[in-house]
Amino acid sequence: MYDDEIDAVRAMLASHPRPANLVERRQRLDLVAAEDPIAPDIQFKPEQIGTCEAEWSLAPGSDTTRTLLFFHGGGYCSGSIQSHRRMVAETGRAAGVRTLALGYRLAPENPFPAALDDALAAFEFLLAQGVPSAAIVIGGDSAGGGLTLATMIRLRDAGRPLPGCAWLVSPWIDLDMTGASMDEKAAIDPLIHRDYLEELAGAYLGGTSASEPLVSPLHADLAGLPPILIQVGSAETLLDDAVRIARRLGAVDIATNLEIWPHMIHAWHLWAARLTSGREAIASAGAFINRHLAT
Image 1 (cartoon, rainbow, N blue to C red):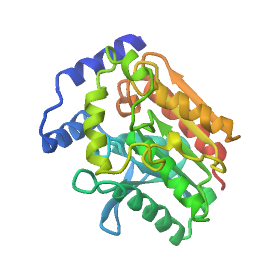
Image 2: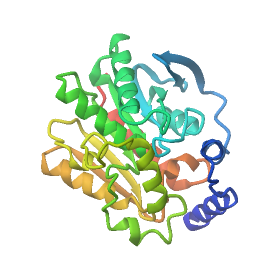
Image 3: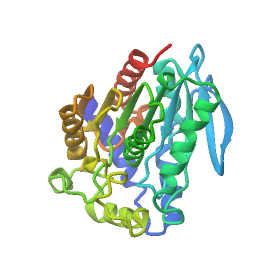
């Protein structure tokens, strides 16, 4: 059953090939990631954080005193609140918390450190709203996973409070792309390949070195971070990014859960309406968040 489900998602993605034009690429991601309807019982409310649009979501019965702050994927160049709306809302439901999705500034119009500055501003916004740091989980997929780690590193180095835990989905944490799976999984990953990531990295870096720890947290000092859940598919080129960052976190005594989901592709949670493994991964993330956030 699981193979049939992921094959159907692969076929859907193949029917919408990635265009060369950046505007069309952004439209495509919003299309393919948001094909499935959102549950009608989710309440959404727009928010403004500086120059960035953001969006609250709340499932019935969720605890409004605890918050998932989410940074979407898209290689820092695409992705949006819209593309990840269902994934974020359903994770909030699974964890029993409200969510705040951030539409951070995108490259190449806004290269590093614009996205990181926006992420930090969103966390500080929650603190200013009276949300205790221990009642916040920061999460993100792909580039949003790297941004999650960079945000926590900046907070720690500035002596600011840290979130209660973090959630990384298919994280992109090595913009030098040195992981062996980048090539080993290239034939079976329908979404992420070296040449595409090189293009995205160049747009985001804007002249910054790819080895800078705040763009490639694989090279960062990770000591002192809160518990972290990492989820990655076995059929994606970023598999080694997840495995290597889990090892580095564990080496400095960070409580780290690494889940490798068989046959799953990059950020498969986006298609949880079609994937049993997507729903199970979201349920696992919800349980982790609920366990580690303060009440």
